[in-house]
Length: 272
Image 1 (cartoon, rainbow, N blue to C red):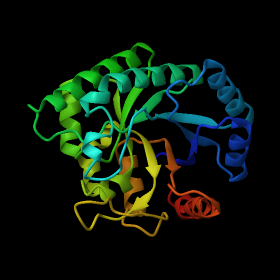
Image 2: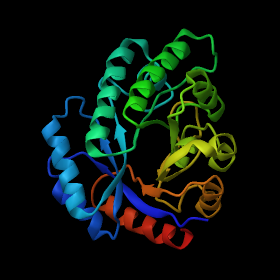
Image 3: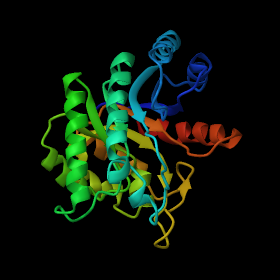
Image 4: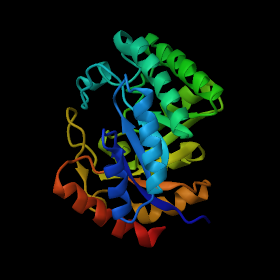
């Protein structure tokens, strides 16, 4: 089986040279680049690509956000996240297509996002509207040789697979966030791989716990302190042919984030 590598999620910044240098200081040479700016100029994209190449850092995936209100919980999340809400669907479809253009300029093969709380009912108009939006984005991405990836979280693995089937395009993939599957209460990541493991093109190395009520997500935890079983998850990923990066994501800020990222590197390294 292949030996995997370790990377880190990096937010878009107006000082990419410093950010890529920090990645190398941690002993890493890859990242997923996260961008929420819908109007990012071409010159900024070119600068980011130049900075990454100069630092020797490979951008494995562009994580693309979108405009409009997003609330990361069970109450307002279904009406605010991703391509499911009809009020923001057209705007976000266009913004994600722009993300495809940014990825092409960066030389990155994948664009990922949260598609949202896909309805269980296949006849729900918001489900069919979301399918049409994904077809448009993925079709546009395919014209540029780019994959469009769902980051796991709000949708159950079964509904995610049904959406892939209904879209019917060959360039759909998954950016697996095993902690999100737990934190949204939708699946054990090991079991979820049995349903969609062949589609995984990126992985967030993040840890968390199941939710304990119907209002708030389960808590994120430092890697190794949560319920994601990385010693079992990593060989199972390899069994499906995954040979990419385990991209550390720690969704806090400040000095503790760096401490937790370095600890995650220590935990993951013997498992590669």
